[in-house]
Amino acid sequence: MLERITELTEDLIRLIKDDPVRPEITADFRVKDGRVYVLRDDGTGEPQAVVCVKFCPEIPDSVESLANSISSGTAAVFYTIWSYAAGAGQRLITEAADDIKKNEPTVREYVTLSPKTEMARRFHHKNGAKTFRENRDSVNYRYTEKINPLYKSPENDQASAASTVDRTAGS
Image 1 (cartoon, rainbow, N blue to C red):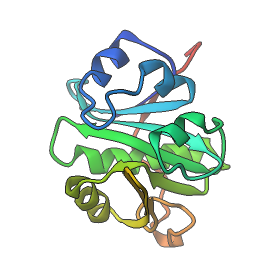
Image 2: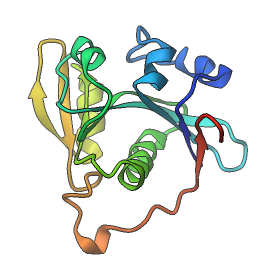
Image 3: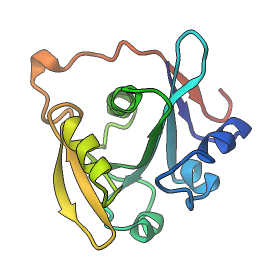
Image 4: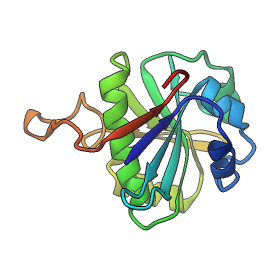
């Protein structure tokens, strides 16, 4: 089950303590200027993977440019992901992109702001991304065929079968 978190909760604070990629980014930033997706086990409700996304008008080249970017735009920037179960990260990227496609009609690009590590490169290339740009301290990977609806063929453009729980104010 995909959970969309857009407000600060105790559960979110507990989850982000496990973030190995960008632990320096505050919980407030993650929900104020974007959203957090959690893939949970359908049976137990336990978290399987977590990803943080910000919507930007341009593709950021650093955490600083991500932080200074206005919070709207045509690029969904996945800036940190971690998983608790094998294969859950790939499933989460796909389900989060499907949710964004349905709920953020202005988004046209799906990119990352990733650390310069071999693990990040392998993960994103294995899951359909191409290296878009190498920056001083990061790499941007652009998702195309598997994620970006602009590149999907009509026969592969199916509605997500995953249920989504929305944790926004008033929900």
